[in-house]
Length: 382
Image 1 (cartoon, rainbow, N blue to C red):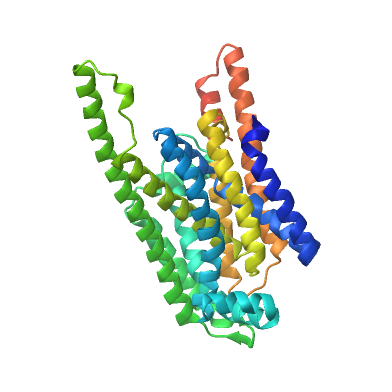
Image 2: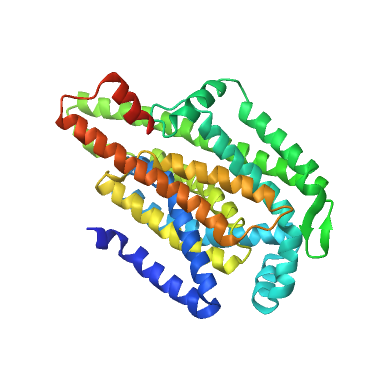
C-alpha cells in the first residue's frame, strides 16, 4: 500500500538527488534534500486539508486534482514562481533569468544578491503573517502550552497580527535595511524593504480573501446538494447518486488550487532563506510537492497521519523561524545548512512530541484514565 501510494515520490526523490549530486556536487545534494524535507513538513497541513476536501469529490474530480492539479503545483508554483520572483526583483525577463542562471551564474548570483533585500522583505512579511495568525489563534490542542495559551488570549485583539507585522517591518527597515548586503557592498535599502514588505503583507491578505471567497461558495453549493439529496429521498430515489460532481466539485477544485498556491508560498519563499539557486529550489520543492500529493492520497485512503497533531505546530514554528532568518539575511549572511536545519529540527521535535502524546493517550486508555491534570498535560504537549 505504501509503495503503491509513494512509489512515484520515491522514484522522483532518487532521481532528483542523484541528478543534484552529479550536476552540482554534494552541497547541492544536501540543500535539495533539506528543501525537500522542509517542503513536505511545511505542506503537511496542506495534505491534511486537501484530503478532507478531496473526500467530498467524486472519482473524476479526484483524478483531475491528482493529475492536472499536480502539474499546476509542481511546474506552476514550485518552478515558475521562484523564477518569477527573481525576474521581478532583479528587473529582468523570466527567460533571461533562466539563461543567466545556466550560462552566467556569477552575474545571476549578483542580480539575486542585489534583489535579495526585496525578496527577503516580501517573503519575511508573508511568512510572518502565516506564523502570527497561527500562534494567535486559540486551539484545542497546544504543543507549547506555556507559550501558546497567553498568545491565544492576546489574539482576541483585532488585527493584532497585522500591527505586529508592520512594527517588525518598520524595525527591519530602520536596522538591517540601512546596511543591506548587495553585490557592490552594503547599501541603504530602507525604501525597497518597506515597499516589498507591504507587498508581501497585501499578498497574504489577498490570498486569505480568495480562500474565504471559495469557502463561502462551497458552503452554498453544499447546501444546494444537501437539498437535492433530501428531494431524492422524498421521491424514493437513491440519494447516493447525488454528489459533489457539478459546480460544487468545480469550486472545490478551484479552492484546492488556491489553497495549494497559498501553502506553496511559504515553501517557495522559505527556500530563498536557504538558497538562491533556482534549479536547486525547483528540484527540492518539486520532490516535496510529489510527497504532498502522495500524502493526500494516503490520507484519503487511510486517514491516519493526522494522529501526529503537533506537526502542524512544528511546521508553523519553522515558518516563523524562516521569517526571522529572511529578515536578518537582508544585512547578514547565514549558512544555508544552518537555516535549513533550524526548520527540520523544529519539525522533528514536534513529530517526536506527537509520538509521545499518542503513547500517553494509549497508556491512559489502558489504565484507569488520566486525571484532569494529566488530560491538560497530554493536550498541551508539555
